[in-house]
Image 1: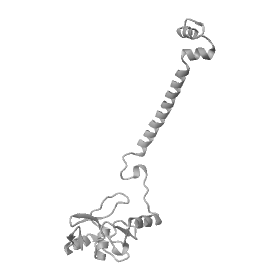
Image 2 (image 1 turned 90 degrees about the vertical axis):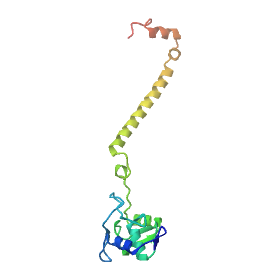
Image 3 (image 1 turned 45 degrees about the horizontal axis):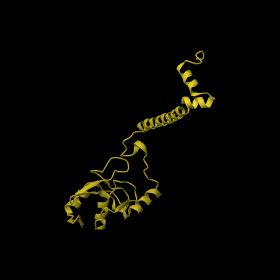
Length: 181
């Protein structure tokens, strides 16, 4: 078998299987070494061979089939990411794997701060939403104020009350109707 044009040596295969806790065909054979992440849903084993880091379940199936499955999806019937038992593995497309995941109800739909790549926390988003809401309130108040200012010019007021704008000017200066506070 070759990977990336390089022949896989028996010593590499032996080194791989030495890191797997092998049991019966029914049991999961869990990878005992390095994993690609400790986060939920990303707990797959990874093994460096022929200069490439490859997910261990893909290598286990490749060794079992006698040909490298490459980057094609390898599906777990046991739904256990670190499992390398070739009797629990089967080749498939990405679409096959997504359908299998959905049918078994194990789709990981993490939201908000639970997502592995989230930069925001739930509390920070609440704060952002409060700021945005305040901004909308202030923006509306500003629009209302501008509208009010346009309709409250001395000329507009004089026209509305049927008097000359000079009367409104005198009232604004406190020179007419002084007794009204």
